[in-house]
Image 1 (cartoon, rainbow, N blue to C red):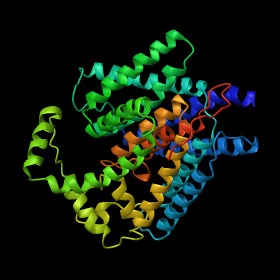
Image 2 (image 1 turned 90 degrees about the vertical axis):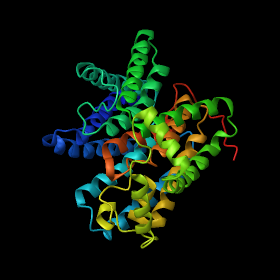
Image 3 (image 1 turned 180 degrees about the horizontal axis):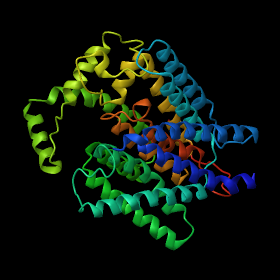
Image 4 (image 1 turned 180 degrees about the vertical axis):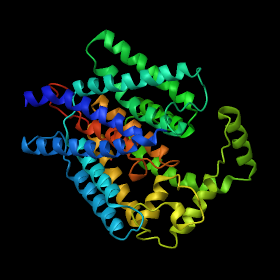
Length: 397
């Protein structure tokens, strides 16, 4: 077991290098897209190998994982049925989707350690440093910075997602100098995030920080935030559609222009309205895995909302299965709330759930960020400090 732990940071470093290579899929350099496609496959296979290795070693876990495993199998089955009935996804993309589900399972089952957090911090720190050098080289752009990527929204969500691992690397690094370097890299990350001007990613970060304040001061109510956020996501869509061309909507739009130099009503309301009406035509099983809003509706864009997208693909059945999966992960995190890593996983998970009200980054629509985001949510479940054998915090609901 000690030998396995000795090699774990090397595994983590390789994993995060692959995760960073995956992001090539969203750069401006189309000639390298195939590299990213196969890197995504390797990422899934690497985690699959770790999963098999853990089972072979008969690893014991701090908390029961049957609920998460069952929900992942249910999610995979739902996607498979949707793929069988779909005309919108090829076999290779479905293979990547299957490997993503396996990756989530492996991320939950793997025993992550302080050294793994440090290894992740080194890889991400180097990437953030390179992005910062590019930002300086291009003239300290304070709005719309996208570096080598096709748009600033992608860079924004990428920075938001990897910030979680930077926070852990600061916490668990045993060397003061390295800890300071990790902290500097995290500050650079936040500066670059604001330089992108990505409102959805900044909203996700805001929710994560507010959630951290709540878990520190009001731990009893923290478990209920998942339900509040999920209900709020659906209520927000209805309110957003109805606010346009109203007095309140005009005031909020003016505030958005003042703060972000962007319209609040960027067209999502019209898209969501079209997508909802399209969903109502096939509400139960949807139109099939991989379908885009532009394939079956008058919209020429994507759904720009993960919950609507899943319902479009897999119907209300798929949406319920997604909720079961997210709830099972949340419940797993609530059982590990004596852990710093799990607390931040839960906080970032809430931020990601809010972010998904505006974008599509949890499944095949954006694999390169999906792997990062699911790892953020799963890391706290598998994390275990050295010599930590007790789990004292219990769910209160």
